[in-house]
Length: 142
Image (cartoon, rainbow, N blue to C red; front, top):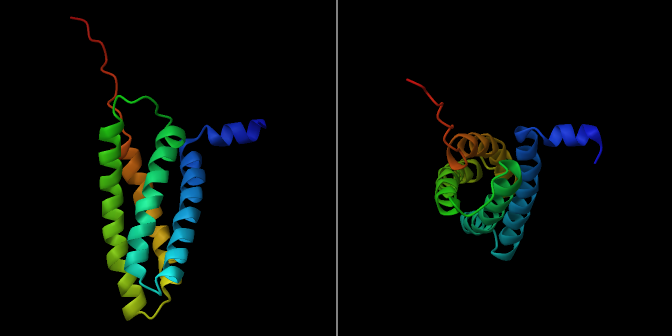
C-alpha cells in the first residue's frame, strides 16, 4: 500500500468517510431499488434500506473505522449503534415527506440531500457514543 494511502487511512475520519461512502452508496442503491419495486412508497423503501444498510454499517464501522474487535462489548456497541441510527431514521422519516410532499422534490433527490445531514449526525453519534471506550484511569500514588 502506498505511503500516502496508509497515512490517509490511519486517520479515523478518513476511514469513516470511506466506510460511510460505501455504506451510503449501498443504502441509496437499496432505497432506489425498493422505490422502483414498491411503486414510490418512499417510507417503506426508507425502512427496508435502513434495515439492510445498518447491519452492513455496524460491521464495517466497528471493524475498520473504529478498529474494534472481539466480542466483549459487541451487544452494547450494537445497541448504542442502533440508537444513533434510530435518531437518524426518525430525522429522515420527518424530512423525506416534507421535501417530497411539501417542497415537491422527487424522493430520490430528497433522500440524496438528507444523506448530507445524516452523515454528520452519524459520525458524531458513532464517534462519541456508539463505539466510545472509557479512557484508562491514570494510576495515582498516595
